Length: 293
Image (tube, rainbow, N blue to C red; front, side):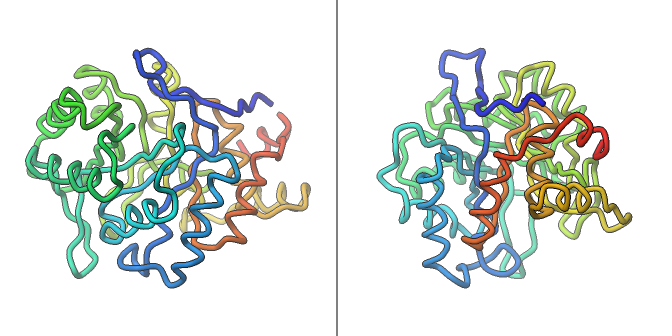
């Protein structure tokens, strides 16, 4: 089935980004509860260095991972950065010492977060920044997004994306300016919106058709999450057929589901990282995809 190896971000603008269609999400490089330093710091740095060796040129991070742990690891492992490396970050949230997630999305908050990312990553401009929608926000969505576009005009952001959006929010965002990417929760086992401990995670399936219509890459987070409400052995059956892991089939399914999906599976294990990379070499047939539907 059609499974292109690259994807273009912001292809209709003057500054398109060509990305190898397999990225790496750094969230799992932090400590327990996505907070603090990793248990195995040398392995975390080794994984980041391996991303370059394996041809990955898209790394997803956020200054509220840690806090700021993943950004510091990226800088330590990869700076000075190779020319085609795209470091994508997120703003709109922060963490409390009790590890809770809270909105951090006033215009002043967003500016502070961008400046913090720029400082820690040692960059003058961030290629792609997602505005992450948080539940129970007192700040209107349009006010936050306006601030993002202002930061873009100032040159601190090259491209603006949105994360954890529903259909209405995505359509609003598209009416306000150019949206380069969408980052929502999406995987074979969980495709639609679900309530989680830190709030709602909006599903990728709900916005995929809009992304495809507008040539906007959809970047799935929690792509290996399986819904707890159902038992599904279809992935296991296909994994057995190809003698690979279930995680590899989950990733392969995303790559085959739509040419506009850019997977960024994350892990803190070098072994699992190397396994995940091999998923891009798995060719699923139409019959496989129909079975997995």
